[in-house]
Length: 359
Image 1 (tube, rainbow, N blue to C red):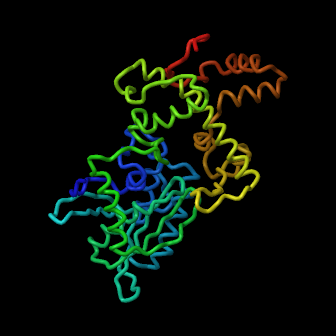
Image 2 (image 1 turned 90 degrees about the vertical axis):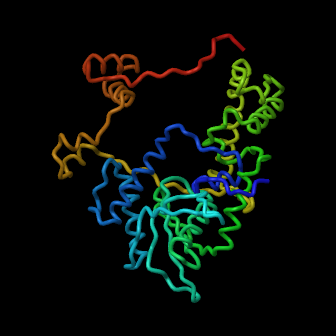
């Protein structure tokens, strides 16, 4: 096993702890882009920017960032808050093997049990996951940078406008947790494992471990199709054979999700503590129920207010049909006839389709 620390990103530690072969996808992610936009506005506000100036954030995102801003101000209690703090970790030889930026660090120190303790804050725009490994890495870097004895970790989830319970991290605890993952990643004999992060992994389509698991489902379904997981990256025909399997795997997984949702979410069946699952309530999205009344009540000029409004073709067709007593096809023709060039199509896309009658 390699004893040389491997360069890893703190944000990837939770995934690498489950699969040492995980590699973050390089595909564009709208969710990540929106999260990045929220982080930039939050940072700007904390640095002294005009609170309320939210750039291209939508109203819901702005409300989430505003909650996080006031929460951070509350927990800092007048102390200095540094944002986007760049930090690093180095090995015994002084070689850097990890770097990252803490969203916010509250300084000067809190005093706890005669040890210097700082607070690091991480803002999450997405779902609530187990981010302990990532935060342990930030804690280690913060202890080095600020020469602190321990770190108080605070995680804020904007989507739910909720803060997780804070927890205190000591150096030995963080060091052991982080290095366990670093060593596993550096092990030349490491092997992939199906895990919670497969959907975000660059290697998912070529992953032998994931392919083997999918093949097990196919065999359980009666062996409708078979393929060689080892050949997917090299043989286009094997890739297309595996592509057929996705119909069955997708159908199976969606059926399981629907069944579990009905049992645990809707019916409230008890979920054992050691499964790692729980029912999370998500706040409903905000919307305007009466556009005409909102336009009249707003201080914005009507033409400026209308920039925030959008009309979908499908909804317009539906309303035409109800109001005029038309079929869907007739309503669509009426909309096109009246609005003419105001109706536009989006950018066309291509996809891999299956020939009818082909098994």
